[in-house]
Length: 143
Image (tube, rainbow, N blue to C red; front, side, top):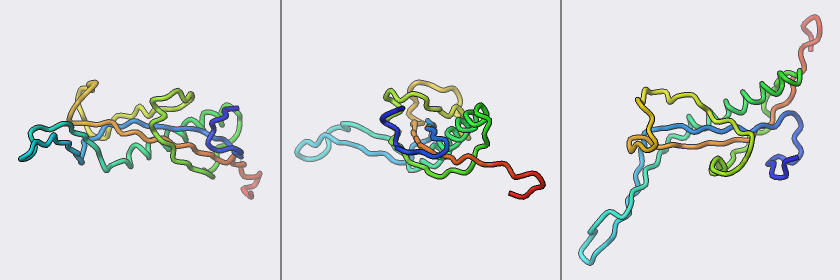
């Protein structure tokens, strides 16, 4: 058992999903080097965004897709989520195994992807979800 599992006693299926999405930055933070009378140079710029919803939505979708694969293989039906836990997306750079990265393209046509593109930044989202198992309705349509 993974000793770092965020949910100590899951009942159902516990899966991890993550997403990396490229978006246009809508916030910039600038650092200046100040010399007696004022700023002499820009020391650094940090581009950020307030639009995290798409990455979070895709992380949930990735977790659900993974859970469906496991349930199909186990011969059970996936039920509703019973626990959703936001996870620090910085672990995507670490060594957590078994995560699913959303490979869906951004909703707009962004052209050729490059290692660094100042017009776009990567945003990350990660989630741990526990889904219940669903029981199929009994014969005759009554639960």
